[in-house]
Image 1: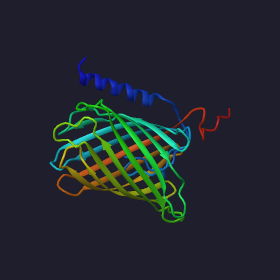
Image 2 (image 1 turned 120 degrees about the vertical axis):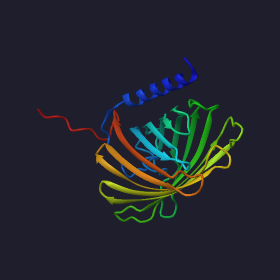
Image 3 (image 1 turned 180 degrees about the vertical axis):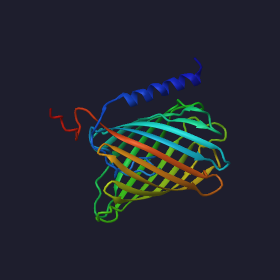
Image 4 (image 1 turned 180 degrees about the horizontal axis):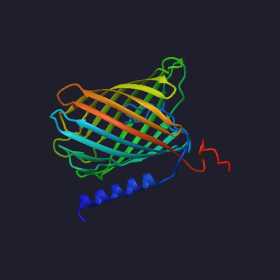
Length: 270
């Protein structure tokens, strides 16, 4: 079995494991902003303690040279420890200009540092470890990220500002690559109605290749389809020579339950 087939098999096992864990039901929260569901911005808050959530992200992107790229990424989240969130993900990539197959498997831990006050935003620190399962990956890379969330008013609309800054350390840089690169995001969210949230953000980031930076404006919505499922959709447009022309994302997140579920379906009465 060659290296590419081994990576594909490893990703397939990961995806099967993610999909097969748990049963549906713990109440979902469409106000809790998750990265790439549907925008890059995320808030500082984890899911509930001992909660479990399955997410599926799908994305289409047209590059600045007209190349079409696609992504499907399953994510499994655990609410652990208290005030924290642990997740594992493994995206599939295909299209023009990039190798097809499973990209790096990522293990992520978020920890909420403080609760928001009248003056102070809520802050969270996020650490990511990227296992080299991608077709061109070498070494174990890691990312350190900060997230902040501040509520602008206590009105029903729940206007909030969000800021993210991440730095990724490239463990084994190759010729033409950076040894580290950043991503900065400024976002806004507000409630449209009881089931729908509106989001917008601006993303500025560096590519792993030297001399390539991008700027993207994004907007989208998160819709609570059922008490345990949230649908999301968003679109982004690039600004600048190295930025993608367009990015479109659709996603779903489904809360799972087990022994520690906060909400379960009512038992049948025969």
